[in-house]
Length: 115
Image 1: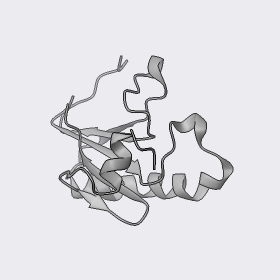
Image 2 (image 1 turned 45 degrees about the vertical axis):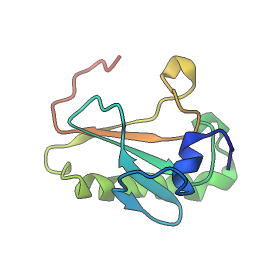
Image 3 (image 1 turned 90 degrees about the vertical axis):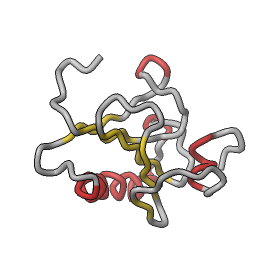
């Protein structure tokens, strides 16, 4: 756990959130600044600053995150119409919290390009 990381504090239950899904490896909750009608964040409980910092030891964890996103999207009612999954990486990629996290965006038609 990084002491100054807000997502580490959420994962440790030091900061309460409206938990949509949780298991021993990850937690999903609504984004506090949503850009879509449904905007969820999925974070690993292990601190990884961004996808570039993931190591071969994180392969199983990353696979679990990807495999669980459809389940979280189903809980949120997004599987019939679809959704977007986003990983922002570093400052130029739009990452504002430097703890790896996936955005699940849905509830409206997504346009392209995104940014």
